[in-house]
Length: 406
Image (cartoon, rainbow, N blue to C red):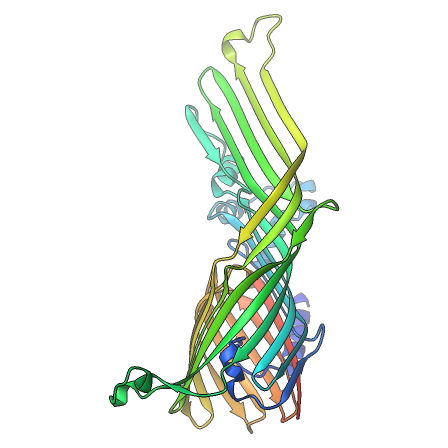
C-alpha cells in the first residue's frame, strides 16, 4: 500500500509537471535579443534538493526505535550499511522572490539556502557497532566543517545588443573561427539572513592494557538575535553562441561574492577523560576528568567567501525536435553540481519532455515537462538521487512560472 501511494504521488506530480527547458541558466547574454517583458512571480519559482551520501529511504527503518524496544537486534547487514561510508547530508533551496527582464536589462531578487553536514564518521560507527581494539588510538572528526546558511541575492543583468564574431575579433578569415556570440554582464549583491558553522569537531579514543582515555574538542559559530549582516558585491559575465543547430552557454558568476557577518555567537567545548588500572585499588583514586565550556563567545567579523560559480552548457538539435545537451555546473550554494547529460523532445512544440542524468555526490535522474505558450510558460521537474522510490537517497523538486508581454 505504501509503494502504491508513493507511485500515485509521483504520477500526479508528473501529470501536472511544467518546465520550459531541460537546462536552467541565468546567463545574462541571453538578454541580447530580448524585446519583451518577462516576469517571475513570488513563491512560484523554486528549487529544493535533499540528498545524503549513505542511506536509501529503505534504510531509515534501521533507526526505528520501537523495533529495538521489542528485543530486535541489529543485523549484520544493517551494520555493514552504517559502516560503509561517512554519512553526509546535503540540502539546497532557492526561490525567486521577484524577477523582471525587459529588452537588454534584467533584475532578480532571490533567496538561497545551503546545508552541508558530515553527521557521522564511518570510523566512529565501526567503533560503536563492532567495539574497539586494544592498544589502538581512534581519531574522528564527526561534524567538523558542517555549515548552513541563508542569504538574499540581487542580480542586475545587461547584455550588449549586438552580435560579435570570433573571426572578426581575431582578424582571421578562417571558416573555423566564423563563430557568432553574444556577451552579457551581471552585478550581484549578497545579504546574509542566517549562518551556522561547526568550525572544529574532533574526538580521540583509546584503550591500552592498563588505561583508557577519551578527549574531545568542539568550536562552533551561529547567527543569533544580536548578529547582523553586511551587504557585499559580486560580478559575473556570460557568453552565448548560437551556430548551426547548436547553442553554447558559458556563465561565470559570484566573482568576489561573499557573506559578510557581524557579531556571531559561538561556543567552545574541550574535555579529557583518563582512567588508569595501576591506581584502581587506591582508596582515594578517581579517574581524571576535566572539561571546559564557554558558550558566550562573540565573533566580531566573519566572512564566508564563495568560489566562482561556473556553468558550461552545449545544446544540439539532433533530429526533428529531439535535442541533446551536455552541462557542467559548480557552485557553492546550488545543488546538484558536476557533469550532466540529457535529451529533450518537444511534443507539438508546446510540451517539452526532458530527461537528464548527472553525477554529484550520487548519480541523479531528473525528469521535467511543461507547457510553453507565447505569453506564459510554466513548469515542474522531479529529481531522484542514487535510485528510485525507496531505493533513492534523496529527492528534488522544481517549479517555474514566467509571464511575458509586450
